[in-house]
Amino acid sequence: MTWGVITFPGSNCDRDCIHVLHEVLGERVEDVWHEARSLDGLDAVILPGGFAYGDYLRAGAVAATAPVIGAVRAFADAGRPVLGICNGFQILTETRLLAGTLLRNTTRRFRCRPVWVRVESTSTPFTAGMPRGTVLQMPIAHGEGGFYAPPDDLAALEQSGRVVFRYCDARGRVNPAVNPNGSVASIAGVANARGNVVALMPHPERASEALLGSADGRRLFESAIAWLQGRLQTGAPTILEAAR
Amino acid sequence: MATFRIVIMLKPGVLDAAGQAIERGLAALGYDAAGVRAGKVIEVTVPEAMRSKVDEMCSRFLANPLIETWRIEEVVAA
Image (cartoon, rainbow over all chains, first blue to last red; front, side, top):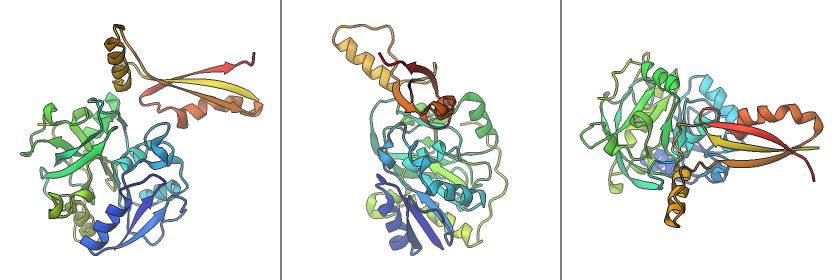
């Protein structure tokens, strides 16, 4: 499979994603510049973390106007897998390919530490390869990661099974004490209606080798690879019970 | 040309972490404010023909309608 990792001016996790996909997982990877107007030939695309265009105006807002975004939109519309990580999540909400937005952390601090998330939906290429309820340890590193959606949008996200990850403790229990940034309903990641566009604040690419303390993040990439090879199916999004 | 000052504020009810931090700073100096909200101001100068586009610029890009409101004031040269 061939992955594309988009580099915006200010991206700083693009090389990490390329490293994991190529060196750890043996995939083909292309570095896609933000001025590219086509993603032809790619099987999946990643919008990596960083501070694209300096995060001026709002995190991800200026990046959402980049030339490559038209191609990302077409790629997403074609049902191909798109993964946004951290700043990539912020960019995808600014493009409105994903619902909601990311607010400054309620702690008012940039938070850089390991967290646990629980897989809430397996109806995406990135999670189809693991059981629902799987607990993954990955680091976060952000100042603006508080997921927010107005009440009606939030209800629609929950009811349609588009909440993909929730912050939890090491045993998978969701509670406000382990919500690192004030995200509504402890939401760490969401998907679009079709399930092919997924984004999360934690960094799977920084947790893909045991040497780095956790290899849990690798499971997202492995799942997408298996899905692309036709070894996994994603059905209609499952309706999930509210946070336990 | 026409210049517009756009004042963007977080909607009431959306947690304003920056406003809270500023309020704490004021309190540290002995000013107990009853509330602080932090927003941003953007001045945009456009050709006359684009006057009608300023609100659209706000809803599409300058503000995030999910969480922010905006007010547009024309800046009249002194």
